[in-house]
Length: 290
Image (cartoon, rainbow, N blue to C red; front, side, top):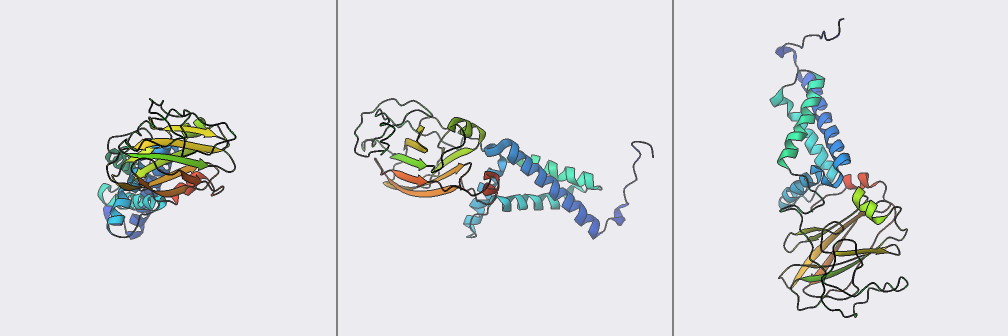
């Protein structure tokens, strides 16, 4: 058979239920491959996380509860499988391409959830306003009683203050102490840039979400297997509930809640649990509301 010579496709009446199921499966596999490729390549900028937030919002409204990330992948596969009824591919290759292309259409409807702030997606944290330096390395008590005077704090990954925020400042003064008992395998900056270390902070009171390690304003420092974060979150309510999600290679994903009040707050201690398997698989098994 000469190169390029192909067997003619079946006539329309020859496509039975088994053929349609096979083509639908090929299309579903196509969208699954495209989804996993996007997740691996784009990492936390993948649109899959934004899809998950949309689905979680809908299921929470229906009282079902948030679905894990793998359930959203299955939902996208179902969309790819049923899309053959509209596009009507006649070969397995064409069905696979149909599913692969379907994700591209969906991604255009959902902008990537980038680590940098996006309108309506991420907010910048306020400067902490602390000028009290870190105590000596053998004294990391994060003492609440240390006083301070307001200052212009530098941006990301600079020494943070070990002091409470002035209650006269509007908003919530937050200090988070994240302990990694086995340490981190790589440089903290490298892990943040590669997606091996992520932190999200969500204010349930006003719906704002912050990137703990990439947004400008908040003070972050890593010492003695411990990450210290200090920032001020805007808000007018007397109290609010904050949710932090910390993801780090070699540790289980942690999601902790904290009831904050206006002004200074007690230290928020988060202890990471070693293990849990690859982050990729852990993320697929979790819902992403923010």
